[in-house]
Amino acid sequence: MAQEEPSREDAQGRRNGETERPGQPGHPVVDEVEVLEELLAQVVEESQPKGAPWFADMRGRGAIVTGAATGIGRAIALELARHGAHIAFNYLDDGEDGIREDANRTARELRQLEVKVYARPCDIRRSVDANEFVKEAKEALGQIDILVNNAGIGRDRALWRMSDQEWNDVVETNLTGTFHMIRAMAPAFREQQDGKIVNISSIHGLRAEFGLANYASSKAGLLGLTRAAAVELGPSNVNVNAVAPGYIRTTRLTDAVPAEILDRARERSVLGRLGDPQDVANVVLFLCSEQARHITGAVIPVDGGHLL
Image (cartoon, rainbow, N blue to C red; front, side, top):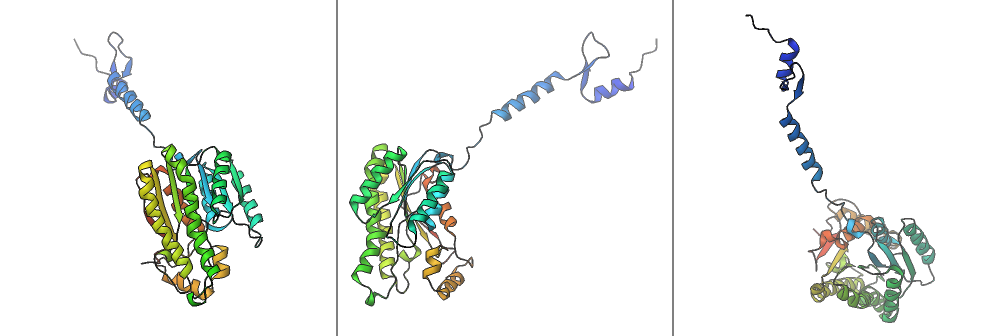
């Protein structure tokens, strides 16, 4: 008896891995084992943990940024707020240069990012003022997790012509003021066993230039304070680091520094440019996050290779 040859459709189905269900000739189905393996692969793929966005841990944290009405401090406050941190900032209102208007503008931009904002004038050279500001900031934000000591001034002059007032103003603002803020925040950081401190120093704390005796001394002292605070607060899980900006294009820099000095600084940078406030803010954000949890006592230059 002649055997019936398979149809073209049957042969194609077998080549594609389809089989006939017993008792149901002519009804091809996909191989059940292959289907099961494919489904299991999809389940495994979908169940793999997805990494959290960088700096997601910043959301809801409270940060104090000193001297944040303008310039680098303003860029730092805005960058932290973009990642969900609540911001308290202060500034020195000496009645000149429209600083209060600048501060109000910064506060408005921060509030547009839907974070809590507390801002007022404060002379951090006075320990009483620093203590009071920290207390008010904690009440306004709920908790302080981050302290960025950015406030700083310059009074450039050859040291043999520098007055006591010019020396004292710079050292007391840049160094003593930072000490006041760290001392005011230390008890809270130690109690909560958590905290991030970033001090804004300068490449001139690492290498001086003419006319910067007061400024270079204050910024070099800030590096020593950074390391000392890192040692003393490290057991309380508090990271203390410093950033050393080079020549950064702020209004104060471009208005106060002669063009020929800026040109030389640009040429000295191996990247051939001056920095922007955002360049510093990006590094500060990293140091304030859990991405930098094992970094403390460090000094990070943000200078375009100026020191090389």
